[in-house]
Image 1 (cartoon, rainbow, N blue to C red):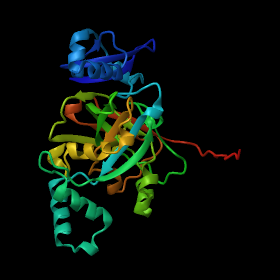
Image 2: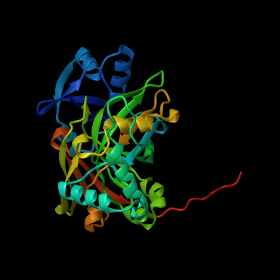
Image 3: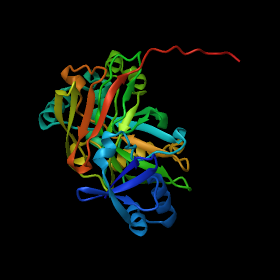
Image 4: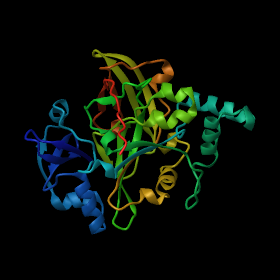
Length: 330
């Protein structure tokens, strides 16, 4: 079952469930977070809560999307309690890229590998441990809090000081921390992780700076397990013409880490197990327009789609105007 959060034409919050090709409203429900808390309290799954509440009339999701009424698949009234994070160097890429990477790593001496290549090799060797074992920890980064979360169809804001504003088509896990500090996974959604690749290339120690950008997630939340083999398309349009398009792969069949291993190394930190917090954790990608020399411009539209996730994730790029920050001593 896939869920979508939206506003109706009067601005009232709603949740709709995909039933085949149509969407039906979940009765007596205003948010996915509400469903999650109800499921945690009842000791059951979200789908079971939806079955109890029942489904109502159908809703025109396409119209809501075109009118800017779709919301991220999870949110809350206090964005400071949403954590946006991710992992990199987790994906194997295409077969050709994979073979080339294996040859490069296998033939190289340890001292000649970059830190990134060493990290990638660590994942290949120990990112998929046997059941019950802990694998190697991945690269990890912080993107911001819920104030950086952008809904489907909304503009992704790039700061005026940025050197680049590039898409990253990824899968995100959506989590809520229960009253006892236990993480609960609601499901998965498409994500545009959106980073400054030019800044990152200056020096890998600038990675932290390059990731402090908004991201977009949604529109649909997949309840349950992530498909092992995800095949999608990432594209950029400019003035209604496609200027770049490429397939991307995700899911554990195309990754050097298991989802379980990536989750463990995020939630092993107690700071990420605070009751009531929401986590949107992105699992990485191997497909970037930046790698093909594309420089997105103000007004370009990013679109990420994969059949398992239903509706595409679509966001225009908007470059913010320069602003000055005044520091006041007290």
